[in-house]
Each structure stands twice: as C-alpha cells, then as structure tokens.
Length: 359
Image (cartoon, rainbow, N blue to C red; front, side):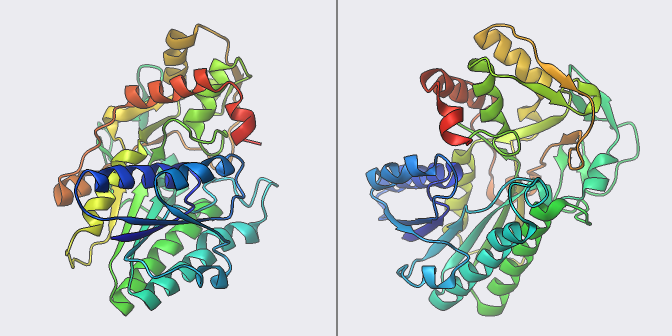
C-alpha cells in the first residue's frame, strides 16, 4: 500500500507515520510511505530525519498551492494530518482569518482534487471543535473531584449522554473559524468521495497527545502544561472562576492510527463516514486534576488564576466513540495515565522542548 501523509512532520503526522511503518513491518504487507510538509510550525524541522529513518520519502510543499501536489506520485491513500489546529486561529493576532481558511479549507480542496485524479482514498483527521460553542456552553454540569461532569439528572440535548458528545450533537455556528473550516472540509470530503467514487473517512478527534507533541496553550495543552510544570515555568487557570475545572478527554495518536488502518483496509461502502474518536470518560481530566498529577510527579508548585473567561473556552467536552466501537470494534488502548507519563518522561529528558517547539 502506498500512503501519503500531509503535515507529515507535525506531531500527529509523525506519530501516524511511525505507527504505520511498525504495523506494516510486522504484518508482512508492503508499505510505501510518502509525506509532505511546509515546515511552518516550530519543531517540525526536527522530524525531517525521523521520517527518513522509517523509510519515508518526504516532499517540501505548501498544500495551499495545487501545483505543490503535482510532484507527488500516485498513492492509494492520503491521510490529512495538516491543519492550523488552534481554536483561536484567525482571531488572536498571530494568524489572519484568511490564513486559517486557506490552510484548513482551500488546502483540503487541493487534496481532494488530487484524490479524484488518482482515485486515492482520503482519511481526514478532524476535530471535536466542530461542535457548537453555544450548545457546549449550555451543557448541564456539576463539580466533581476538582473537575466538571455532566449532570445526568437534568434534561440533556440530542447527542449528549454520560458517555460524552456523539456525532449528532449540534454543529450550529458559531464554532470558531477553526471549527467551521474543519466542518466545511468534512462536508467537502464526503461530497467528493460520493461524487467521484473514492473512499473517505472523517475522524473527529478529541485532544490528541503524547511524547514529542509541540506545546502551546492553544494547541498541545497537555504537552504545554506538563512541560511547563516540569520546567517551573508560569502556569495559570483561565476562566471558570480560575479553578482549573474545565474538563476534556485525551487520545493517543497510536490509537487513532490503529483505527485508520482498519478503515483503509475496509471495503465498507456505507454512506456513514464520520466518527468521533476520543479517550472518553475513562480518559477525562481537568487542568486542576492534571496539576495534582504533576505535583505527585514533579513536586508541588503554585498555579496562578485568571477568572475572566475567553470567548471560545468551554467547560466540558468529552467524545463519545460508541459508533466507532460498534462499527469497528475500536476502543483506545493507551490510558490517560500512560499518556501523562509518556509526556512527563519526554519533558524530563528535553528541558528546552517548549523553546524548541512553541516559539
């Protein structure tokens, strides 16, 4: 099988590439791995040699330019791990609104045209942030063990249960420029696949995390928090009374990769192409709980507080992956504890990681 990974030298792209290389090597099946990256993200240059070490062939290109894909040979599958993954993108003064749309939507059009031309399958790594900010903000919650949990004794909206957010939860705007660009990319991907008869899978992921993740507070929060705690750098809880109770779930890229291998090997012609993937309730954590874990691991330290809430922040978002479990028999194998420890070990061994990866 010949597979092209876009954003190949980002954290997720590189972890997917390594998992695929190891999985195919142990299966007796042949794999030719290609990657493309524009190296715009600090830290991505570090993965250039890593991609070559696993036998991959790397192209330097910008997916916003259709001509940069012209040099890529035909592949069987394209895995899209390229994006500007910040919910603040386009509104925080670091990137323009036009840039976020170009990176996350116009690039998708170019990738889909490539897949149409070469009859290649397309696997889109999407995001939990396609769900409505207003609907998420109105979820009934209760405080539970220094975090938030769904109040199951109140009336819950469609798509929400104690297991988390399902695929039929509201995606009504506003969902941020980032979320809307990814939601539009999802729709285009499914439309292209149906119109031009190539397989498409859309995987809406919760927080993806693991060792080597680039750390910034708006993307890569687990890496940012654990590395900052380890290196005694300032940390603060923002919003929600400054308590750090906002709660998410986490997922290791290896668990995502395992499912994508199943998807790429499937002959399933179902029209249902969109799946939620996350660690679920067993992998939830609040920032306060994460700080408690870090205190046990590195020693106690003070966390500052800023009660004022930002416009896109939400109190609770956990992904319900029941549909993927029913369809594929899939469930995460790597626990929250393992993810935390993997990042912490990397942080202890790489004291300059934040400066390298989050400039």
